[in-house]
Length: 70
Image 1: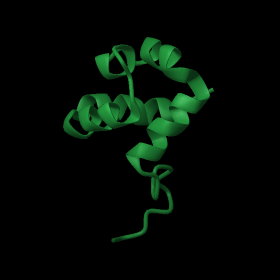
Image 2: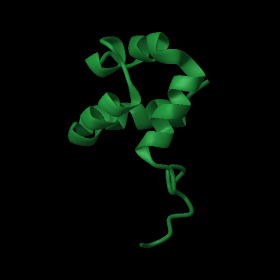
Image 3: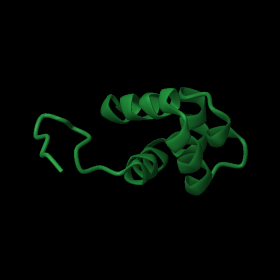
Image 4: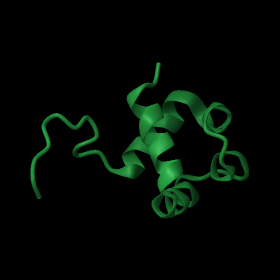
């Protein structure tokens, strides 16, 4: 695998990103910021990862929030 020193997501797994966002915002705030059911309806890391791995647009929103979190 080629190294990507300018990619801020390099080396971060989707699970780590979602976990950090949940710790930072909590499920309720995360669901308000990114309106997808896996964050609002009985949320869990496992169900969120399953959805995000299949849905490119949602994963991009999560990655964007991760990079721009306050």
